[in-house]
Length: 257
Image (cartoon, rainbow, N blue to C red; front, side, top):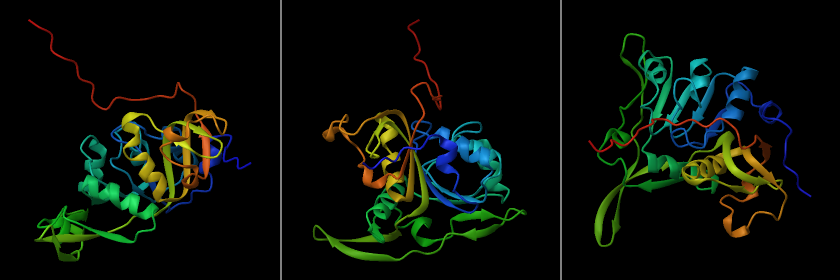
């Protein structure tokens, strides 16, 4: 029987080297693989290039790696809840490849599906396609690295010529993801918003490491309820149902006067 379980998060991430590229699941603070992130922090891995929708907050999620200066580059679509991220980026300490959210999702999915690149309308007529978007600043505030010009082609769609920009797929050395349930074969089930980027990140990683709240035996998951088949998952670690979960921005409704 294929048994992909590992005894601890520390053992599961132990071979991730300095300079590795990672696709990391999570949507805001929903579905962050925090046990794997903290294990990576504890072992001292640095110079990481990370692809993730966002970079957590200052003291949680990927933010703990950022605070420890372990991240060299982020490829993200939303970076607005992390003050340290802003500081490192504007000071030239961090490289950022800002990517439209839907494009980022498709780049990960394409990478996991063996598709080298695709054309999309998103970004046409902006710096996403025309280049010049700052990726890294110099210490004096000038742009040290800017995004390149991308190929734009015209395709006839529904009888109308439209411009599309070429986007390359993303494949990373490793993927770190969080799931609600998983079995020993690596089949995963995600909970609500945690399903947004975790399956896509898992697909893009050459080696996918999944932390699950509950580990079950093969056959216990309803095949129709499996969100990601085990073919994409290489290692699985059970972290328990009481694992810390944060709320990015808590709001309350205003009561009637």
